[in-house]
Image 1: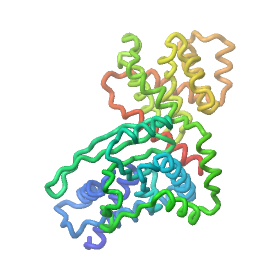
Image 2 (image 1 turned 60 degrees about the vertical axis):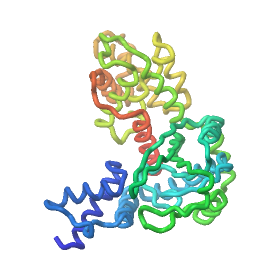
Image 3 (image 1 turned 90 degrees about the vertical axis):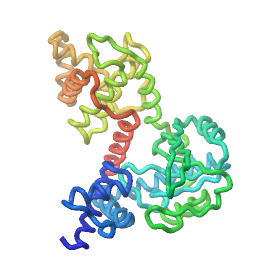
Image 4 (image 1 turned 45 degrees about the vertical axis):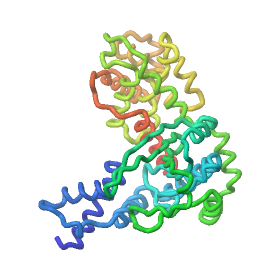
Length: 369
C-alpha cells in the first residue's frame, strides 16, 4: 500500500472509531487504526493529521445523519446560547464542534468560562435546576502538570464547561486539530452566527420555547440515580440494587432493539417506582413518568408485572386477552424475558448517563428521519 493510501486508510478507520464513539481522542484513534491496518510500526509521517480525521468524521456524519445534522446543530446552538446567557458574568465562549459546525453523533456543547472560583458557577447552575458534576483532571504537557476544572452539565444536550482563571479571558488558546488559534464565540457573536447561518429561526421565540419545555431526561436521571441505594430481595434479585438491575436490562434491550428508543426507555425505567413506593412500584413509576413518556413506553412499564403472571399461567382470561390483543404484545413478552435475565451478580453495565445519552441521541436521530 502506498504511503498516501495508507494515510487515507488510517484516517478512515480512525474516523470510524471516533464517529461510533469507540474512541474520543484523535491520537488514540489514529494509533488503534494504524495497529489494525499495519503489521509493523508506522512512521509518524504516515499518520494523518487531526484535521484529516476530523474531515472524515464529518463525511460519516453527512452520510449517516443527513438533514438531521443541520437541524440538530441549530438546536444545539440555541441551547448553548441559553446557557451562555445564564452564565454571562463568567464571560462564556462557545468552542468546539457546535461553534465550527463539525458536529457528529453524540457531540456535546463545549464552553470556556472564566472565574477564580467554581462555587459561583455551580450556584448559577443550581438556581436553574441543572444537574452537574465537577471534575478536576491533571494533565502533564511539556513536563509541566496542570489541574483543569471541568463542569459536566446534563441538559437536553450535555455540556462540558472548562473553567479558567479570570485573567485568562483574553488568552489565545490553540486548537489541537489545526494548531491555530481556537475558534470561539461570545454570546453576541453566537447570536450573530445563528442569525447568519439559521435565518429561519426567531431566536427569542425559540429560547422562550426552550425555557418552557421540560427536559424528560433530567427527570429520568433524578429518578434513576437514587435507586443505587434501593436494595431488593436476594431471592428474586441476587444482582443487588434496583439501579444495577435496570442497567442490566437496558444493556440486554440494546442488544435486541438498539433502534427502538421507546422500548429502551421501558427497559431502563420499568422499576423506577421502587424508589417511591416499593409496594406498588408500577403505579408509582407511571405517576412519576406521567407526561414524560409515550403511551407505548407506558404500556410496556404498566404491564411488565402482568406479563410475569401471563408467562406463569396465573393471569386471568380477560387480562390475557387484553395483552394478546395489543400490537406491542411481543415486545412486552421480550421485556419480560429481559427483566428476568437482567439479574446477574457482577454483570458489566454502563452508567446512567451513558444509557440516557444513547437513548437521547437515538430519539434525536429518529425524530429527523
